[in-house]
Image (tube, rainbow, N blue to C red):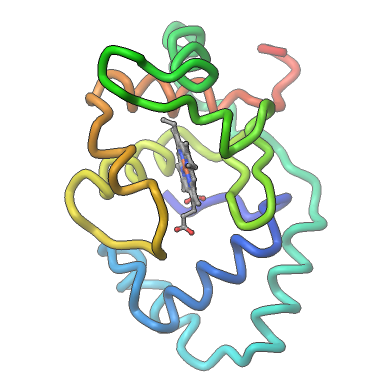
Length: 159
Ligand code: HEC
């Protein structure tokens, strides 16, 4: 349920810590765990924590449904033209490694990715950006497929 932070992008971690501190990221587990944890973080500590986690090696969660991974990869790389869903690759990168403040998705756990994508559709908030709109256009099956595919990215068994 909690995200893997190892290898996550420095600026993304920093932005999330600030959005917990400022009560912008407001889904139930964020309220329960992260609002308190981030309440007293100084700018320097946010910077140091983000820099630290971003240098740790990534380890894929590998816990999605293997049978859905190919379908998830197609959506990730090509989007779904008929439902106006853009390709995830244009922002999150060809290997789901992220860029600048856009997070790495490769290797996050299936359950975290699934909840995160569902919660945008349920109206919970995050820092400004395109995801609430993108996620709310995905069907439950598409979310399952994407979360499965992404959980395996970086794993020797699917590359
Ligand atoms: C136009 C650029 C753009 C596109 C296209 C895009 N994303 Fe994102 N995505 C972002 C940004 C920016 C964030 C960070 C939002 C924030 O700071 O809260 C993000 C965050 C996420 C997160 C949260 C990761 C975490 O660690 O909590 C997930 C999951 C995600 N995107 C999945 C997807 C999927 C799946 C697609 C394709 C269907 C997609 N994104 C397409 C820009 C994009």
